[in-house]
Image (tube, rainbow, N blue to C red; front, side):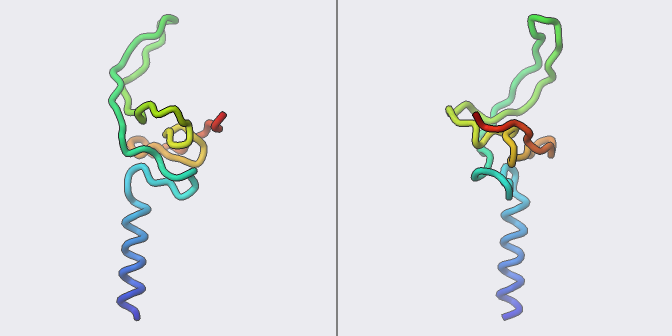
Length: 82
């Protein structure tokens, strides 16, 4: 019985440690990510290179959505889904 409990605890720890998995999300963030090159906006502000989820017509699995977190930076999402 003790072995069973340790196996289950290990599986849960492994699952929660995976990139893109968020315990408080609407599911989980997309594992499909794309790299965005750095660029300068029309107003002159420079945006550093970064990773983002691929476009899929939903806001529920974006790194910036409240309840999800960015596996590359560790930052929690703050935006609500509209």
